[in-house]
Image 1 (spheres, rainbow, N blue to C red):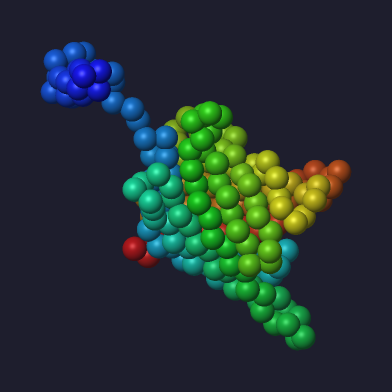
Image 2: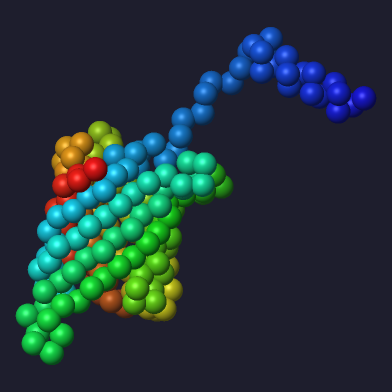
Length: 177
């Protein structure tokens, strides 16, 4: 009987019989500009190259999945190319009230990021690592600048143990799809 009453109250509420709480905003909505396929140029410590990215919502929209493949021309005749790949998931942690990002790299590293700042206009997002698995003491951060609905610039910084952040790579992406 107790459960029948609860179901009846919930059903009545769902039909509008009680005042309803305001609709919850999607905490991952700020990442919506990323959804799609991207390609562009990248440059930095590994060399100059090309990059492709894909972002899409996954698992009933609770996560944003990303895949990155960058091919750098190293200028080294022994190994003329360096290929980097990573995949990851952005999520929202209600306890921390933060967007988190787990990024798995082809080099065996796992970057755990938290969104540290977002521009008031929503066009810049800065993620800073809370931990890098298999690279003790290092820190990283990524800054995304949404230039237009079809263009994103990204800067990646790396800091060895006890050192300040230094630019490592930059990418300029254009939407393909």
